[in-house]
Image 1 (cartoon, rainbow, N blue to C red):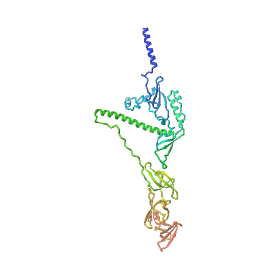
Image 2 (image 1 turned 120 degrees about the vertical axis):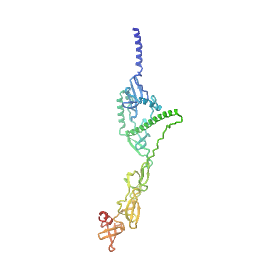
Image 3 (image 1 turned 45 degrees about the vertical axis):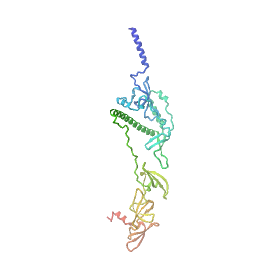
Image 4 (image 1 turned 60 degrees about the horizontal axis):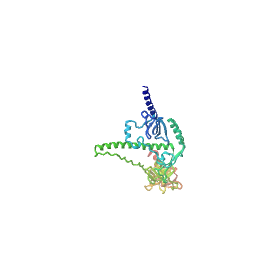
Length: 417
């Protein structure tokens, strides 16, 4: 019995030695390089599985830092899609997403963002490229990260290095989807955090769109293959054309040649862009000559009204005729002036209306000597020639010495009521 026990203990000891040298594959989890896993700190990809120390080296997905690596115990890591439904869906995914396949490498521009000129960016104001990147800063050495097995400490050091590298530096992005009047593109200045946030949002949209397409393609292939096996005559289309979305066009308000007033002075509308709703406006000097060009939206300007003039009151025109300003067309800036002396209507630009006056020629007025009719207005001395209704007398008066009968009726409410 003693010999049997020694033999049994000998073989038992050898088996125990072999078990100690080899990893216990039955109890421990096996992770291969490239597996997508879930950790307490987010989604990650397996880089290396150390069986002896039960430590898994992972790179996090979606972190803004160029390198976010952690060393985590295998007991707190779960493989993505470990359920029955996840295993079925994983069988229809592309070969690049299978466990054990190498992780898709990013381009050098993406690895070195935001330190590379020419990187494409998708901003809230349109698509552009980086023209002034951020200078390269010193990164956290990999030896310090490898020396620590505590995952929380590694993540904290990475976040600190990220905050220190951000700083207050700004980067310049040329918005290529916009073109100004001189043929150049506007430049947008932003912080690194804002640029990274825009880039992450764009990548998330592309990734979600790719997952949806791969899932629909896998299910479509499964349904198509099943139907073809039952009947070759029945075919299921695999691709569905997405509806075309037409570009939004802005509605135009001001017409070409319209006289407008802007924050930079008076101007004239030259053209309109339906794609972004901007007007090209020629800015004018006081003498009426163009000296600059501005690109403005509708909210940044208004129609131009002749200086000091009010609709419904008499005005003096550039041609020596006096009349009543009936209305102004806001889309063109044209002034409609009724001339009572000849019963005509003149359509004039704002610069063709000189100034407001007390009464137009042929209008009835009331003076301290009785009622009369305006026969002439003299601009050189701002005097009115009024023919009185009695005695055919002529009165030469200033604007302050008489009243326009229409104004007096409006003040009293009409006919003194």
